[in-house]
Structure formats: structure tokens, C-alpha cells
Length: 291
Image (tube, rainbow, N blue to C red; front, side, top):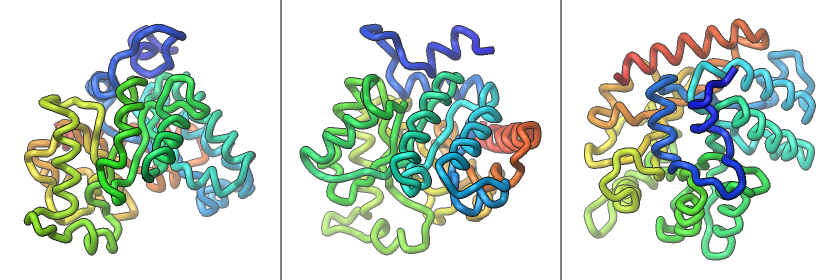
């Protein structure tokens, strides 16, 4: 059963009622429930491992089980939009229902969609997810800045208006990422550092701003100390990220790191008790390391 505090931080507000900025809600939720973000990735492989059909119905069963296991255990979950989109219109409906279910369960929802475009297209993407009355309303989403951080302004504006958040890709853990993200501009800064600086400026002086970064848990280049806002750190588990290494990798930003894991948790399923144990154990390891 959710207490009043959980409902205030995670659930959509009543029409016309104010809600705290996403960064504040996330900070409070993490302080109570720990740092781990549970990824919800109904891939073909994960569905098969659970004995589920590779259909929208199978994805719905998988995702609802992950939400049930995460409730009252962590602060935030991260559905990966692509694994729902691949299943067509029915998969999109499942995604919408999963986001509603998770928020109703007292969880913050970070949609991993990596959207990014210019002008009216960015405004349409932002309108789809970041306002309280959006078709698939979430608490935050990931965006990609490689048409320019300035082109993401519609996302920042919608997040500010809706009390939601944006996580901007800065340095990703995939092997190819460094070819672009570590490139140095004529100004002498890497592309990743330029993104970090732009996000820092938009957060102002707040370390709990609503605009965060995506910085992989397996990246060998350490996050600069001047970064602010929250840091989504995917890659814990099969990709090679070790919870005990997080503090050394992220240094002074450790208290704002949100390590994300999906496959490592899903491997414990499909039983809810086993999933809850896996989530609780990994959350404890990550939170102990980061605090």
C-alpha cells in the first residue's frame, strides 16, 4: 500500500494542481528508496526465457511483472520504448498502460526513447510524453543531442511546464560512441563535454535540476566534476558495469547517479519473489556504493 508521500512524488497530479519539479521528486524518492533504476525491456530473448509469446500480450505480462516486483522497492523504472514499438500499435498500447500502472504504483517513470530532432518535430515528441495530459505521460525521457543541444529546447520547455525531466545523452557505453562523443571541437572541448556544459547551464546552480545526463556505467572516461543534475548510468550487469565501481567512476557526482539494469534483473524471473529479491539486492549494492 502506498503512503501519501509516495503518491505525492510519483503519481500524476489532479487537473490544475501544481507538482514539484521532477528533479526534486527524484531526489526525494532516491533518498527513501535507493539509487537503482529498473529497466523494463520486453525483448524477444527475455520473453522467450520467461516462456512468453513474442507478442504484445507477452510484453504486457512481462512488463506488469517487472512493475509489481519494483513497487515499494525502488524509486524509478525505465521502459525501453523500442521493445514495445516493435510490436506495433498493440505494443504502443501496452507501453501506455505500463507507464500508467507504474506511476499508479508510486514509481517514477523514465521513458528510454532517445528522441531528438528540430523545431516542430521536437515539439511534437515533447508533447507526446512530457506534459501531464500527454498521450503517454511519463516523468522523464531520454533525448539525443546530436542535431545540437539547442534543438532540444522544446523538450526543456515542455519539461519545465509539466514538472517533468529530460536526460540528454552525453557519453554512452557502446563501443562506437567514443568515435563521436570523444571528438574534440575547434573550441578544444569534446562533444560530450559540450553536452555536459549545456545541461549544466540549463540547470543553473541546482544539483537536483530536472535536466540530467546519460553517462554509461562502463565508460572509461570519468565524468567531469563540473557536471550537475542527475546521471543515468546504464550498463550495470551483462554490459560489464559493476555496482562496486560506481563511486570511483563518478566521483563527486555519485550521490546523483542512477544506475540502470534490465537484463540482470529479468534473468531472475518470471517469479515475482525472485524478481523482488534480485531488485532489492542490486539496489542495496548500488546504493551502498554510491552513498
